[in-house]
Image (cartoon, rainbow, N blue to C red):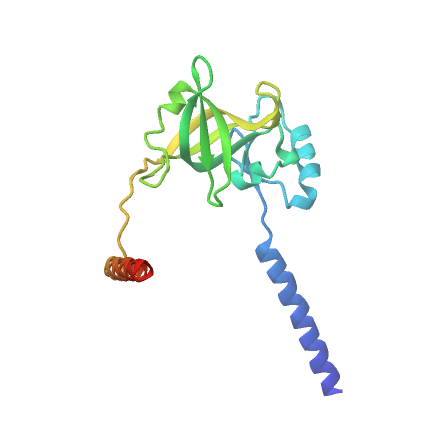
Length: 212
């Protein structure tokens, strides 16, 4: 009898732990309205239904902004298509002219996913640095409309920015030399030079021997 009780207790404990782990790893998205209130839209499985209910429950005067990530947007998330989204990322690559008064900027997320952002010149001026080997790009929190296939830009996936704020100015990057690597590189150069010298001497010796 005691064995059955113990087995039942262990089984219940395992089920409880499994449920707790599942809840811990759930990744809900946050929605905030114009008053700053947070609204839960649930997991990926019910995101379509939740967004529909949310849209029907709000008035036209309420501006809903969905907080998300660059990686989610790049994955062609149809549940967010046409929505007002907010995300943070680093400006990388070049800032490209997009017609009078507008620029294209590439914004990279934490997972190295990159999305194109169409923004007015006044927002583009916030970008003081773009990320490359020598610099860390300016990090921005961008708010704008998400398009899976933008009708204005030949069906490209993009975000039309309506607001942006700098979260990190970025700047030059100093690359530290790992101790010992410089010495190892010098030693390899010396060895390579010696091997090349031996090869040339051996080649000359063989040529003279073949001529004699």
